[in-house]
Structure formats: C-alpha cells, structure tokens
Length: 522
Image (cartoon, rainbow, N blue to C red; front, top):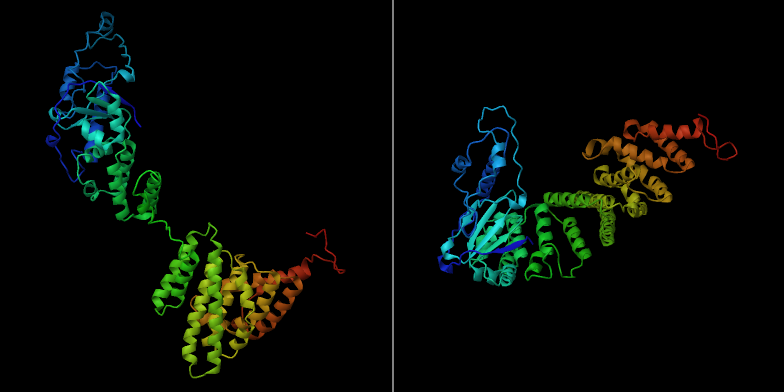
C-alpha cells in the first residue's frame, strides 16, 4: 500500500448528511471523468515546464501566478504558507539587473524533490462539513484533496480504520503518497457514501470495475468488493483477453472474500458428473445424428476449428477414446448400409444418400483424429474392412465413391507424415484399397468438388515409397498395367515410379550378392 502520513489541520464539524453527493454519467460521488483528470495533468505539466529556470530572464513570479489555471489551489496546510524569504545578497548579485547585459547567467540550482510543494489540482467536498482531509499524491505532481468523514471511512475501510486508530492525536489530514490510480481511488472512496454500490456499477465497463476492485481490495472496502464480484458474475465478458483479466483478478481474492466462487463457476465446474468424456461423446453423437444438413456441416467445422486452435496442446486421452468409439460405430453403420443397398435394389437411392452422410461422418472423425495426431489406429481399422471392399464392387460408382474419399484422405495423411501406421498396415492399405480407389478415380475427378487430384496422387506415391523396395516394385508394376490401359482415369504415379527406378537401377544401395554398399558413387 502507498505511504501514508498524518498531519494536523483545524478540526471541522461532522455532518454526513451535508456532504455533497453528485452522481454523474462520468463517475460516482463528486468524481471527475477521466478527461478532467487528463486535462488537469496536462495543465500541471505545462505549469511545471513554465516554472523551470532557464537561461533567458523571466518576468516576476507574480505574473506567472496570475497566468496559472484557476483549477490549481493553494497547498493543503494549516495556515497560509509564509512569503518566501528574500534571497541572500550573494544570490541577488549573481542575477544581472540589466536584461541586455552580456554577463553570463548562472542557472539556479534545482531544489530537491522532497522540498518541492505539490499543487492541489482538484478538490472535492466542503471543508466546513468534514472532519478529515485525504490528500492523494499521484504521479507527475498530480494531487487530489478529499473532504471526508472519519466515521464513514473507518466503518467501510479496514485500512483507513487502522490508520486513523494509529493517529491518536486526532490529526485531521491523511496524505497518501505514490497513489497509482488517483481517479479510481476517488471513485472508490466516494462509493462509501452510496447505499447501493451495485447500482452505481451498472453503467461502468468491466475494465473499470476491475480497477475499482483492485483499489477496494487495497483499502479493505469489503462491501465494494462484494458489489464488484456481483457485477462481474452477472455482466458478459467480451473476448478472451477480458475473460483472462477477470479470472486473474478474482483468483487473487480466492479464499479471502465471499462471492468469488459464483464468478469462477462461469469458467469451471464443481460437478464431477457428467464426465468430460460423456459430454464430448454426447456432442459428437448429436452432430453425427443430425438431420439438418446445414447445421451438421457448420458444427463439424466449428468442432474442427476448436481442436485446431489447441493443436499445440496434447488433447486428453479420453478425447481419443471417444472419437474412436464413434469411428467404429460409423464404420459398422457404413458396412450395414452397403449390405442393404446390395440386397434391396429398390431402396438403393435412399441407401446411397445415407451412405454419403455416413461416409462424410467417418471423414470428419478422421480429420479430428489427424488434428489430435492419433490417427494411426484408424488406418488399422480401415484395412480390416475386407467385407466393405467386396460390397464396394457391387454398387454403382455414384453410390460408393464417398468411401474412396476416405481412402484418399488416409493416403494424403500418410504422405504428409501426419499419420504413421506400421509398415504392415501401409502395405495392407495399398493392397486392400488402392484398386477400389482407381476404379472410382474418374468419377472423383469430375464428380467430387473436394477432391484434389495432385495432392491425392502425391500422397499415394509417397505412401508406396515408404515400403520396402520389393513391395514398391510389386505395387508400381501393378499400377503401370492399369495406367497404360486407363490413362487419365487412373492416378498418375510417375514421380513415385521414377524414384523407384533410380533406387533400383541408377543408384542401387546393395550389390548383386545383397550386401549394402558402403560407398555410393557420386
């Protein structure tokens, strides 16, 4: 807390009901707006600059006092300060009488800061009705004098009660040095005269109430602290930055003040049930089973956005389990829809719509797993769907191509290093799903807006090149036969083919006996 000094002034009569209480839109009890404080600060700085000694001769100080703003009052002292003593003869001789004289001028020595008298820039209250003066010393020689009452301050503030109790001589003046926020200090003291503090806070901003809360905490104004917390509990917080400021300010009071918990409940929950896993599963389930196409699409984007915002922070393990549980349900549902479509030709159109929705759900869950960096197990789940690949060939392309979009996304993830399944899983993925993808490739090129041909081809090629050389050869030679027949209707894996060719023929890493070559020719 700032330093406080007790000085003696003339005793005044105590009449609380006579205290002027002016509540304005700019602030509370006899409190100036921030603009008023800033104007007085500027005026004070201008006056300080004009009073600094300089080399050219100045006019008498009496004229300067006449030019000073009217807002500046005399310093708060028991009696008017005596006139300054005349300067010694040596100093008078040092100042030339003739302004036009060419004699060098001596710069007067600046007085020490502790001897400089501060100016009272703003005064509040009527000295005749108060029995205590509170002088707030702000920065840059800015000063505010308050005419208040002992019993009001002692009743509402533990800090003032303690300081007044220490001053046994009944000194009617408290001087608080180095006051950080004079403007808010005045408002907080003024709130001691308001019966309903919360009502005075309604039109204030959250940032301003946090400043009031800080001062109220410093001076032990418990009623004001309680009203500030009630305000913060009810008012909306705009933006993450404001929310962090509120939470950090309230946490500082935790354990000391009643009313902290209701504010913190907005950002934390004391209820252990439902568990976060159940809540996340419920959210995903609502999105997956939604019948509204627009709402389902927008909420999928929202969830992905939230996950990507915190991608640098490892997500909880229960989050991965919940997503994988939903994945297995959707994949099983997708297989069942393929069975229905193959078994009943009349309901194939309706089944095709449901297949498209379910495949999009699986693709969305795969995106979530990829963002969480835990999509390796999904590749294992996907290569185990041998029945789905068999049913895939029995449906027309328009009903089945959505499944190939999932396969494409897996290849892209592996090619970018975002999904890292085992060597056996990568090989099985190519053997199980590359041919169905090539069968649907022409339709994907022309009938799927989200399909990026170059990205998918690069992903397939990079996935092939992660395998042992003999597996690369087997898959690329099989692809070559299909590419020579289908042409543009088949993925173009020429880059992967060229890399395999160089590894095999141009720069082999093993000799004819199968031994690794330690020195590679440049």
